[in-house]
Length: 148
Image 1 (tube, rainbow, N blue to C red):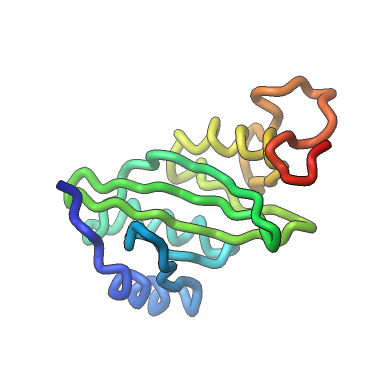
Image 2: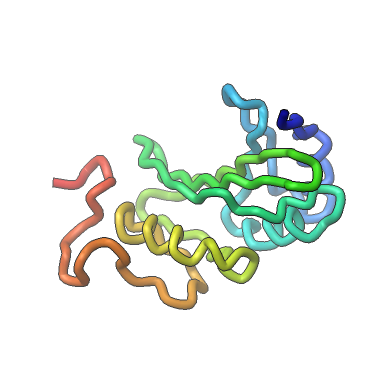
């Protein structure tokens, strides 16, 4: 059975180390935090490399088009502690961009390309950010709510 991570303690440690950059996000899993997009790379490196957390596995990266913002969700798993964690970043709809985490998890490569292709989210620093499912001449991003 999966254990629930103490999000309040985790957020406190992240804020102490990286400045006021994270908060507990209330959802039905009790396993989610929200972080500032500009801190995502540092925070993900910490979550993976710090033996107190040991989130070595990026299970999934997904994105959602909400009326007020785009959101990228990173689903992490610790095989050592059997913890799961969802890290959420909210992005401005006018310029949806967030640093790539491919330097932390190579598995993010394809998943970031998919979010770029279907939602138009730019992952800055990605080594090969181009369409993966649609042709290069396809106009738009079909999972956006405003797609026609």
